[in-house]
Length: 620
Image 1 (cartoon, rainbow, N blue to C red):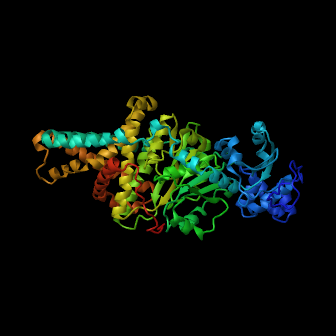
Image 2 (image 1 turned 30 degrees about the vertical axis):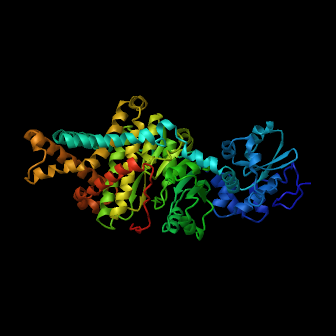
Image 3 (image 1 turned 60 degrees about the vertical axis):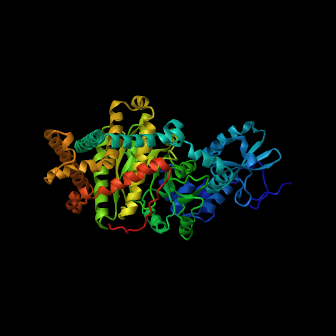
């Protein structure tokens, strides 16, 4: 007879009858795990939460997972399997693809002659699994195992296939992973050609530079003014302010990618514990890289609550990016809604309630909600003040207006929430793109979906040191270059997918943003005229045209001032208003970042220049 490693010290019954028909709560009550008052409160909570009773009890700290599993075994008569001490073997899993085991959170554990024992954490949902395995030739018998144990076993058996899939989820036509060979040499050839033309025909080169600078300035100014006006238009009622509540609150998964975060671990857990959403419906996943010993050591002495777990992403090759890690973790998420926070984020405590209400109030084609990003250390120094002004203007004014108009919303890298089934449909994130967020915003629009801005904020650490700021901004700008080039491979198809208005919005955002940084020195020369100095473009421009350009430049600066001022007012940061004029001195470092990004686009397009966090404290 085969000896099984089972936690319950009872004889093995291959087709066990229920040991008790009592409800799970009554079993836990009989075992003295919970009180009758706790059971009554948990049952009241279950009426509003899409969660099993056991998860509610664990989330509230009234029972442990092991106690719930033991009570479930007592209730159903099923054995409890230890997948850590006796792990499943890979050959048993070949009867179904890994997607099947992941979607049902089950795994074949052991075979005894014609009997196949299948581990499950939800015996109440086992009937479809047994039906799907009916043609396997085995008698299918469930055994109980913890959800985390099942996930770890799946990850151990399928580590390499899942890691490979994480790198290739997005359709190759909308991915930059083939940014090699001739495709990669194209931008290099254009740069060399442009330099050669400028050297051979300097006058023509100056005219071309000026024309490009003015065109991108007009694009960027048009986008900002359009977003500004749209954000100021009255809106009857925001969806998240209607008071509409989902019938039962949904489970929400949150991905928190971590990489070499030595300073952030303890503070991160404290911030997450401030969340007021029901813990039974929270599935927070700390996404770690397999070889990231720095973060592992930082988390080793941190006790994680029952609703926070860690997943390690297997190393495969040299690619170590945030989108690759999130793609891997995406398969293990349990929520109907999926969100993303960064390591240094401090979301508002009621943020997830706000998101759930908003999703319950909008049409099905709204598949993504973008929250507002702000900074908790605006007083650290001048640069952190300017960074806060920049983000306040962008998220609280421009992006708000863009979303209202139904244009493509380039997502921020954090505080966005997706209907998870739609994110899976889109293929998750492009693992090779260093601004996977902006790229995802374009792809969801191409698929006919929409993004809305949700009325909640997350506070993070403003990057206030000069060189780290340049490194971070160069990664963003390089990613914008890659995203634009990827989606403009087939401009006619992009136009068909987006429609004319959104297509023009894409041009205005990407070309406008990149042009304003790469060609900023050309625009700065207009300050010379205001100072009464000769202008280098006087030989190639009429005086009237030159003055017209100066006025355009000043209008753009005035628009930036207005957007920044309205942004800090909307964010209740009025003390920053005197610093808004200083923004003209803030952006020059962006030129260095743009050319650093352009260089990396040619020599190392997938390089992820890591931003280190944990250098500033929360200021309130």
